[in-house]
Amino acid sequence: MNRICQVLGRLLALLALPCVLPVSQAQAAVVGDVLHTPATRAPQARQAVLLDLARAGARLVAVGERGIVLLSDDNGINWRQAQVPVSVSLTAVQFVDASTGWAVGHAGAVLVTHDGGENWALQLDGNRAAQLELHAAREQLPTATDPDAATARVQTAERMVSEGADKPFLSLKFTDARHGLIVGAYGLAFTTEDGGVSWQSLMGHIDNPMGAHLYAIAQQGERWFIAGEQGYVARSEDGGQSFVALDSPYSGSFFALQVRDDGALLAAGLKGNAFISTDDGNSFVPAPVPMPVSFSEAIRTADGQLLLVNQAGAMFRTTGDAPTLQPFGKPLGKPIASVVQAADGSLVLAGFTGVTRLASPTATASE
Image (cartoon, rainbow, N blue to C red; front, side, top):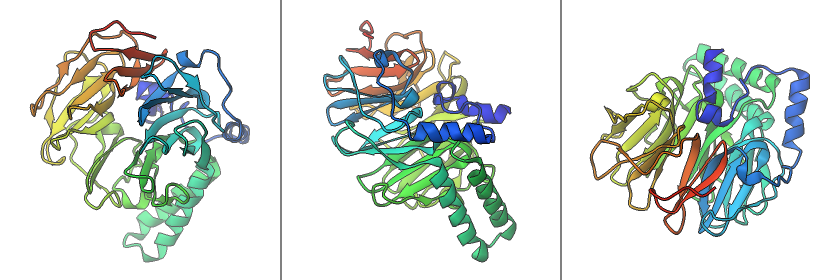
């Protein structure tokens, strides 16, 4: 039970899992309902629980509970709600240009937009994802070099199918309008090469035998990294087609993963633990901070440095090529799940109390 509930980690699971357990038929019906029920128009949507932020050109896009998607065309000062065909909580969002983007969330939902977030369409859900993994597992079985592991994979996939759409996706990374990777609870991992028209399970190509929850993705060229619970970190040298687990510097969960412009890799997570690697994940050095509060996200800012936020609303950033983190601005004193740098250089943050805009790191927050 503790391991299952640990997925609540990134801001208490990015709201992500109401303790994911096998569901009853009644619960499965509820999941099915929210996958086919549009998000409700919420008068106070700006104050909703919001879990991730992204830039779509100059536009800002925020996603969160019950399928809420908010758009801002003035660097986070004003927001309006978009049309969304599902009412599941959305945990992550990314755009590859001003028009095309994806959002992922509960019940294995994957949404796509081609108009800057104004309208969204459902591309994948947990039921179909489970079927795709079962098909891939069965296809691999006859030629498997480890029959026992292959059989176990089939059995796990069969259980996923029977449990229905009860598992969330928690992170995504698209390199362009066609190629992307999405990951989530229990080692969920799927890839697309056609912009999400079709998806393929990558679970048999990731060195993750315990099915660790996967919370974060980072990429630089052909080298990709994923990280998750219990210190799990893995690297791909083939453009994200397969991943090998790395020796971890920490046994607690990592919720944030980011690559600095100079190639340094940062992994951060529970209790304010952060580590930096300058050799592509072969070794890590601690980047201690004076606040034992879990990090929720790290972004690369316009100057190529990294900015982290934690669940107390404090920010830290890298400076130069030093493997250290320095406090940045004034702590907001409230849980923050995500941060983005707007087109005008301001910082916009999202969390349990909605969106907050900082014109500068020392300015008074505007909610």
